[in-house]
Image (tube, rainbow, N blue to C red):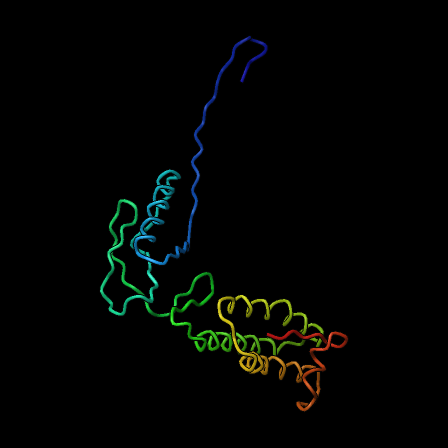
Length: 193
């Protein structure tokens, strides 16, 4: 900064502190040794960027052991005892289970659909609005929740049943009308799982 009228110069300096948050980091490895190497690199990054990590909140999802004894893991310079988890873990809204139990995901999808149906069935919306909401809100949510689980065709048809039934009711169609009418692109173009 300079003062032109007096011919003096002055230098200003300011330190700006920033606060940032980091949440939900996943590290995937095939062995404990590989995991500790990954955590050492991550810990170096945390040190350089001055990020504070609560290492005691770490969770370990494993399929290599069966006992519940804590596993001692070297997380950079810190030794952390972590209780292994064998149950499903939720990460960013997606249920991850090490046993690949599709029944857990199906149950969650069914509850999500039931919640959607209970909300929408009392709303005074048209058939076109229902189709839009189902196609652009409900189905993307369901597909996101099942992103790491592939369901059989029969399971998807079963989950679609409640959505179609409400749609038939909203359209004032009989329950016996063929489902293809609602999924045909030239008619309603209602999505499927």
